[in-house]
Image 1: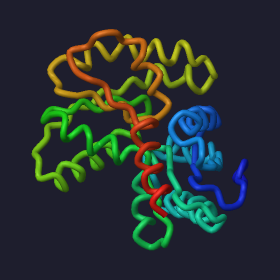
Image 2: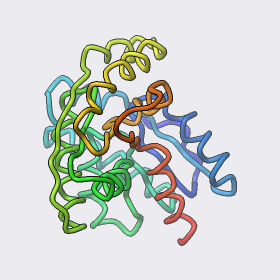
Image 3: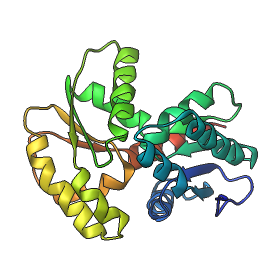
Image 4: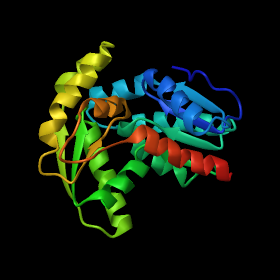
Length: 226
């Protein structure tokens, strides 16, 4: 499946696995960095393959990196993978490239380990959980902190997202976050698609971190510096 919406030489190029993320990041761009041009590639097939396999296979890792390289070779100053399931593939590639390759949730994980010791990881795709756990542990190691991770999987609401019933999806997540927030210092929404649910929760005993804004701000800082 070929990438789409890729003007040459964008300041920040995004690899998405759902088209809904295009407007999410365009809106952040208009708000935070209107002077920076953005580009988007949508590869729903990559996430579908990860869901089918239950994990990121070597072949899927290669396909993800090929898609990210194409964005970098298109002249982007910074490339961002917005899919947490594929985030490790993006970060592994970064060391080999002259262009920064970011995973959208790294900056969120860094903030999470600063926020508290007991971190709740919430996801709607089971395959995302091990990747986010590994990410948080690596952020904790970098910061010299010890953390305890508790995982919460809301896989029963994922069908709503797949079917385009976004209100049901967000409300379903929000209804489950109240219980997840009990006994943790901070909650992390492992998937970018979950972010709007935070606004539906009201007061919770723990703060909620989601990746789109935090990750976009990190990418913006890099793009402006290059």
